[in-house]
Image (cartoon, rainbow, N blue to C red):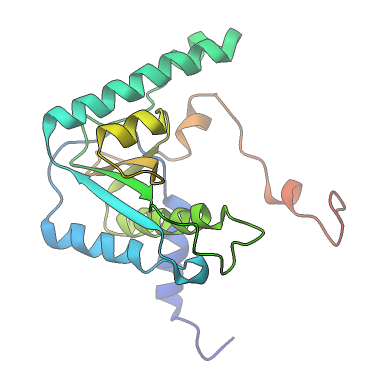
Length: 216
């Protein structure tokens, strides 16, 4: 084992946070202490980013009426998604897809504007700015789980409409509405599995060797 490895207990805690992280939709209200929220956002800010561009921007939503307007945008997209799903529409409409009005804290994670000059690592893969933001969100998610808080990533919204609602400059793009706060319990498995909406695939199905589709 590497001399730089964490202790057994530290490694176990890290893998537990990864294994027990859930996309939460059910929240118990309450509050997130300011010092704890600052700690979680600092963890997000420590994420790796391509070219050290740090493309993430977080907007903390503290106005209840603004929460309601964001929830309305999500509801509009929920109905559009149900319509697009065809025969699965009724099943989809029974799923709880967000906890915007129930969570203690609401954040919107967005990409910065004026990203074009950042070409280090993005010349052929410009979407690496999005990958960097996703790393920041994952950091926040894992830290929240370690702190005993639930987090849910909501992506059902029109990004143009949400950007306009939040006064974002041209070129900035909202990527995630993040519901954060205390929960009564964590799902024992992903909610979509528990609701029989989807099944998880084993790693062995998704791991190839040397060539696409080639498995040992």
